[in-house]
Image 1 (cartoon, rainbow, N blue to C red):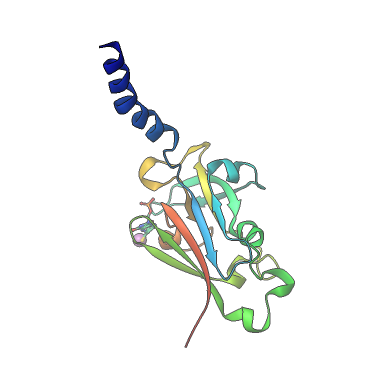
Image 2: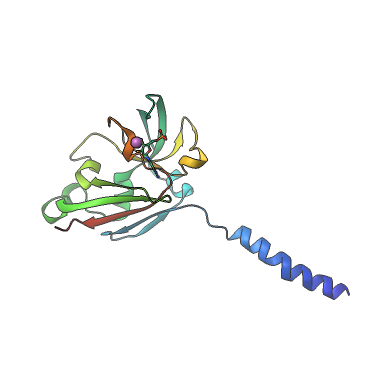
Length: 165
Ligand SMILES: Nc1nc2c(c(=O)[nH]1)N[C@H]1C(S)=C(S)[C@@H](COP(=O)(O)O)O[C@H]1N2
Ligand SMILES: [Mo]
């Protein structure tokens, strides 16, 4: 009888523990025209160069966002930025996708410090806290735009591609 209990325990309990320990943490996948595809979680972002940007939301309320410049992430993936952002590479774009199907697009010069001083970030904190559950865990923040339509939340994927006619 003891043996049966043990067996039941293994059969029903093990998958539970397994399910918990292998439960997927959210990540952002970086792919497409990259030399090093990435899969970044909160812990990875915490170890990268962090910056803060202050910007107003749709209601005009200012917030302090913290995260990692998109350009640093793209550089880590081996995207053609800086001196390599010329010639045919000028026709590449970054498409950012979210869990709810919303997508937004950036041209690479918008993200490159040799073209602009504006720093667009992948934020994981707002006003010192993790992003709200329905607006995170990763959100692109585009400072200085008249409306925050490109502040895409629940970011899952960033894809670099050549624009085709
Ligand atoms: N994933 C996702 N991000 C999104 C949207 C969306 O529908 N889905 N809407 C965008 C638009 S149009 C605006 S105006 C802002 C609104 O952000 P708020 O709800 O934090 O004010 O989020 C942007 N980010
Ligand atoms: Mo909007």
